[in-house]
Length: 198
Image (cartoon, rainbow, N blue to C red; front, side, top):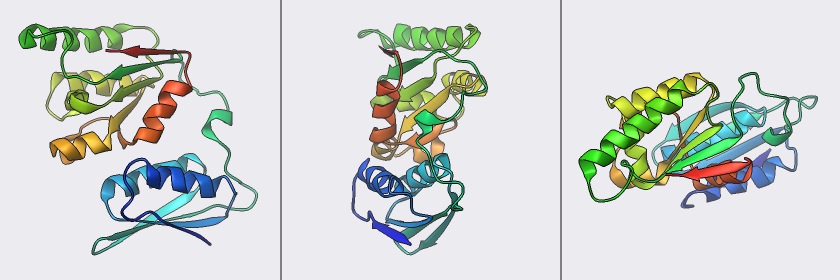
């Protein structure tokens, strides 16, 4: 079994360390982290790469374990088969909870209208990546969260920066998408044809 000690590492180091080991093709891997955001990111990476996972929490230690059969070696997600749900090969990057300048009221109307319009499009973007104040759009009970949930149902992957949700103290209030990390968000920029920044 391969063991990765990622305790004390900041985003996205636990994911990067885990991916490096996974690339060597171990059948069993164990990753040690010290926060739930990191454990969620590592668990999601393992599952994307074909591992069965389990998580154990004890005091400040969280252990994420993964195992895979020898005839089902992980392959990079970029090499997997065509996705069933059609979408544009575009990432929309949102770092604010409004669109535009200093008029906050107008900016809120515009961002809600923008997301609502995206829902009406025939093909959704491949990713919507939320960072900084933009993560507030994914909070439960907001109309923007409702729009994002609809986009997710249509096949768009919503990536919500875990460092940002921790900074604003709203991790438990996120109502859509996955609590993600800088590695996955950067990858969402690099693996598409076009990035639109709002």
